[in-house]
Amino acid sequence: MASNTHGSGNSGTGASVPDRPAVRSYLTRLVCSMCGNPEEVDRLKNVCTACGRVLFYEYDLDAVRETLPRDALRARDATLWRYRELLPVRETRHIISLGEGMTPLLPAPRLGAVSGFSQLYVKEEGLNPTGSFKARGISVAVSRALELGATALGIPTAGNAGGALAAYAARAGLPCYVLMPEDTPLANKLECVLYGANLYLVKGLINDCGRIVREGAAAGRWFDVSTLREPGRAEGKKTMGYEIAEQLGWELPDAIIYPTGGGTGIVGMWKAFDEMERMGWIGSRRPKMISVQAEGCAPIVRAFEAGERHATLFANAHTVASGLRVPVAIGDYLMLDAIRASGGTAITVHDDEFTPAMRAIARAEGISPAPEGGATYVALTKLRDSGFLKTSDRVVIFNTGAAWKYSELLETGLLPVLDPADPAVQAQIA
Ligand SMILES: *Cc1c(COP(=O)(O)O)cnc(C)c1O
Ligand SMILES: [Zn+2]
Image (cartoon, rainbow, N blue to C red; front, side, top):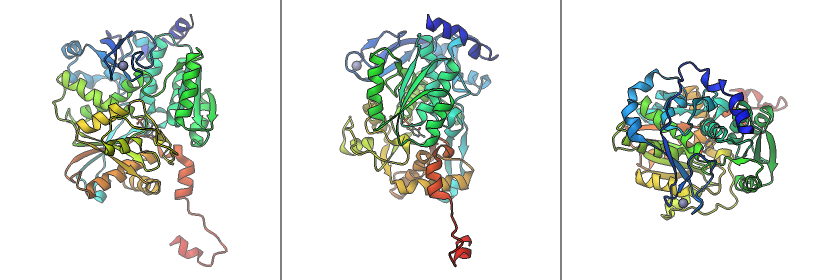
């Protein structure tokens, strides 16, 4: 059995980490978030067989509450696997980790001074393996797929998820197939090839890639690990919610500003807050969940403004923030429900605003922001101007990736080029 081969071949990865002893699994169910239909929890599954929507893992939270006091977390390693009782991997030996998660929640006093906010924080996700927070969801999805016997993995990607899958599949010893729009940033293509993934470039967007991956999965070529069509990825991303609570001393901020593509982050954090409340780790207060999208691809903002629970396909989707180039999302209702229930909002940013915001964050704080991270800062200032946020609010903005993955954008936006024949060349240096 290929699954046994992979399982035993890789058993050292988790077990060799000394302070990661085997723990009991508290995983109980796999349930549809839309219609409540239960699926077999210990089988490889994608979407609800009854309605086609998103499946969520559930845990015996009463039992976790009994056995895991939140303060016990302090002694654990600084990865997202510190929350392993709340993650869907039953056996420690199946954990495929590259040190993802427990990223710093950096106070940003200089950026705060420039923008007027007295309690501004940046959740610095660019420090994850492969330079984006996609490492979180992919670490959990690959671990779980390995545990359940997958022998190959397939993914449609706007860029960073493909690079992350390439790395974690390599570490798991599993072959992977990455389908990516042909005009994705070069760094994303190169990392896939570097890690030995089978990379295919597609004339189209992530939803076109998704169709090809679903057909391949149906033909038995690989297991589909698409965003929210595989239940482990949201579990990996939910750890951002656990971390923010833990890092702020079990108090949530007033607002979280998050750049939204497929939406796993918002959906995952919202689920984490609910789980934490049910374990008595936090109270019932929630941050305003604020979704940021690009003007050229804003299906969630459009649906939010129209008062709809589902978003329609955003035609001619385009933006340089490749992680936000997601014209349709299966978890639209989960994002929109969370934004509304939290008293949050959804807002767009124009492509011309990304590079100046990246520069502002980088120069004020020494943080390397992806354009998606820059978008959260633009949203912060817009929501201050509109009065939606108060400058005394405690706000967390997400930098979801590292600037260096977007070298084409930086090259056109940042590098000054002098023309020696220009008599005004000295003036350009001033
Ligand atoms: C994927 C991605 C996003 C969007 O994240 P979702 O959780 O899928 O909405 C934002 N920023 C970057 C850098 C990404 O790679
Ligand atoms: Zn369903």
